[in-house]
Each structure stands twice: as structure tokens, then as C-alpha cells.
Image (cartoon, rainbow over all chains, first blue to last red; front, top):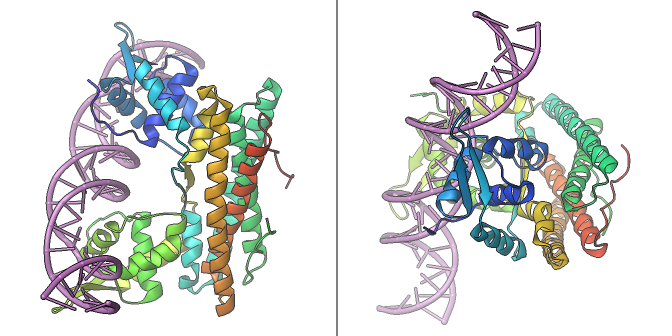
Length: 188
Length: 188
DNA sequence: ACCGTCATGTAATCGGTTACATGATTCT
DNA sequence: AGAATCATGTAACCGATTACATGACGGT
């Protein structure tokens, strides 16, 4: 039954990971997500249980449940799943992007508080958070380096590095030069 | 009636904008969002009609409906709304951030396609999109410059500039140097 | 008057999130 | 054996997105 189920980004994450890692359980997916994609786009674990079920019902995945022990479900990608994934990858029409950052939201409204302290605290907090994230990205990158990974999964991580570096510098400027605008950056 | 309604980022956007712009209709909010916050965190217009209603019912906003003409509702922030907003702003505990970017997702899985063309097209498309966004940010910034705006709403825009610049460079490298990793960037 | 766009909503659906719950392993 | 954590789910709720629909307003 190939119903007219519409595929969300979540769907493609699941399809992609199953294609990439081979037959996987939901827990496998959860692990894979938390090591990679989950760093910039999070998915609650429950979805990694329900989404494969949906996809299986629609024929994009094949589900096999083990009988004893944990009775866990293992998913494999079908031909239909492969072609859906391929179509998505080949479709270059930009699918939009958003930076859902509460810190930026607060900064946007920060002057409403009437207290400069608010911005200071926010900047300090954000600097901390982004510094930590940057550090872990560096670790992961070094780790991939050691394994000789040079594919586009690592390229994606590189974007994360750029992003965190920019964020760290930005919040540093916000914190260190109160009342002044962060610089606009170089012309490109 | 101050029920235990939990406040989402959407709620704070509404509260913040009403606090910032004064009494507003949903359409005013829609306009304000599309000019500013909506650039990095989008909210469908329907939510800007339902969310104020929720907030009004919970006592954070005051709703006044005009009788003739469009019978539109105008919202004003209440004391309770102000204090909720202030509490949120003062709470520095980082509220998490995500970069929900379909392009990055595709890049992560791009090698599954087995076709280098896929990455090329993706990079070209993303470069285009980010370049355009960068251009409009520059326009807005110049516009604010002329008006002498130097508050933290403009600082927020500056982050957008940094982000788009980074994205443009990133996708340029991905497109121009196939098979090579984008550079890791400077130590900070 | 008519038409197109602006403006203002409502309804229904559905994905995402939170909360709950339990069984399997592993460790002490 | 018992505790702690790992692993695997389910269910309910609710916010978010999509689709639909209609009424004002401005211009011709």
C-alpha cells in the first residue's frame, strides 16, 4: 500500500540513515542521530520509533520483528525507499533553512528589559554554550581525521565548526563591547 | 484566569513584539515578524492569530475587538505579560538552538546518491539562496544605519550577516573544490 | 460597479513533544 | 539477587502547518 503519505525531513533522516548504516533498529537510529545530525537538528527518540513504522506501512521500509528477547524491530530500506531518497537528493530546490535560537530571540528583545545586565548574562551564557559545542565538534573532527574520513558527512560537520566559530566570536563581541554593534564582517 | 499554560518561543515572540510595538493586531505582528525575526525563525500567520488569543485568555494580553469594519482584535500587553517577558529575558539558562537546514541534511546524505552531480547542484542552489539572503540582510542593515539604529535588534541582524557570510563561503568551497573538505577554520 | 489584493480569520489535520511504562542487560 | 542503566516502546496531548473561506479596501 503506497499511500500518499507526505515525507518530512524526519522521514528523510530515517531513510537516509537506514540507507547509510544498513538494517537498523530505532535505537540504532537514535544513536546515529545523536552522534551526527542531532547536533544541529534534534529529533526526540519517540519519533525514531514512530516514523520508521509509518515509513514501513507506506512501503519505504521493510520491517522485521525478532521473536524472542527484546522483540525489537529491524528496518531495511526497500527499492521504493531508495528511489524516494534519490529523488529527494536530486531535487536541488532549496528546502529552506532556519536558525531556531532562543538566545538570538532574547537578544532581539533584550532592550525591553531596560537592564544592561540582561545582555551581559545572555552573552556569557551563549558564549559558554557555543564554546562547548565548538570543542566537541573539534573532537569529532579530529576523530574522523584519524579514521581518514573525507566524505560529505564530514563536510557537514565542517559547517558546524564554522557556525560555532562565528557564534563564539559574535557573543564575545556582544559581551565585551556593551552598547556597540558587532562588526558587519568582510565583503564577499 | 491564569491557567498553567506553558509559554513557547512563539509566545515570547508575540509578547515581545506587542511590548516593543505597542498595541498590535495579528496582522501587525505578521508584518513585524516578516521584517525581522521571521528571517531566521518563521511563524505561519495562522499562529499569529491563535497565539495572541491563547495569551489573552491566560491574562498575558488584553484583547479589544473593534465593532465596525474589519472587527479586528487589538492586543495590549498586561502587567502579567510584562513580568512573564521580563522573567524570560532575565533567565540566562540557554534555551537551546538548532539549525534546521534541509541543505545540510542533503549534504550529509549526498554520497548515497553515488553521483557527484548531486553535490554540485546542491552547492549551487544553496550558494544562490544564501547569497540572496545575505544581500537582503545588507540592505536592511544599511537601512537601519541610515536611521541611526544601534540597539540589540540590529545586533541580532548582524548575527544573520555573519551566518550568511559563513554559509556563502562554505557552499562556495563545497562547489568549487569537489572531493575536498571545506577548511576547518582558524583556531579561536 | 468590479476586480484584485490586502487583511482576518477558522477548521481540520498531523507531526512533534512530553510523559509514562516496562522489559533486558550489566554491574556490584 | 538487587540496583542501575540501557533499550524499546505506547499513549495522549497540543502546537504547528495546511487549507479553506470570506470580508474590507483601493484602484480603474
